[in-house]
Amino acid sequence: MLKKAGRVRRNVANTNQEEDHGKNHLKVQPDSLANIGDRLRLLRLSQRRTIQEVADTSNLSKSMISKIENGKTVPSIASLIRIGNALGTPISNLLEENDHGNTTIVANIAQALSNVVATEKGYSVFPYAAEFQEKKMQPFLFFAQKGKVVPHSLSHEGEEFIYIIEGMMKMKIGEVEYLLKEGDSLYFNSLQKHGIIPVSDQVIYLDVFV
Image 1 (cartoon, rainbow, N blue to C red):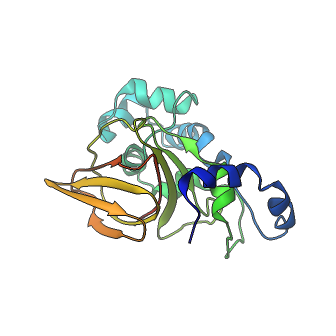
Image 2 (image 1 turned 45 degrees about the vertical axis):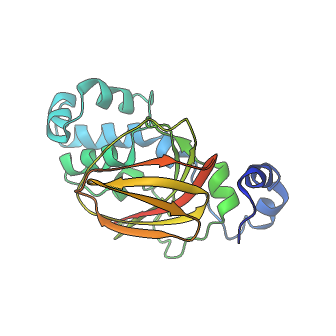
């Protein structure tokens, strides 16, 4: 069982020795989301698509696509899935690093938390196994703080599995609101409108996109 939320962040800040000890087997890719704009631009240009075409197909604004490509914002996962669908590629292809041959990826939660990237919706995410090629699913670690998450209701193709690691949050799926606490899980069709709001000061949860 993890320690209380207030102590997790201190533990993350003091994991240098533990991280050094695990360097031989642990690979963390902090730039997987930070560099997503470059991969998006290359993929778009390879398909001879304009920013406007991608924006229209993904139901996002031209300004948003431009900001992502120029590294000015990190999109929500739902927006990322829409962009992937518009380009005919799974979300994993937008996240993957060019590291062929890895069949087993190990990561610990302390390093994942120390490498989360803030998104436009106010929560932060870490994409697990970014270097694993052509994944069948994409797991993320989410970190959200009370009062910082922008109220939202998103939908996209696919399915999701959520598991609360620490804290408590409300999740609305369609017209039904669920109160989820540590140890609770939820599996749902992502085409349903959904969004989260932290109830505790901070919440940490695993979200697997299929």
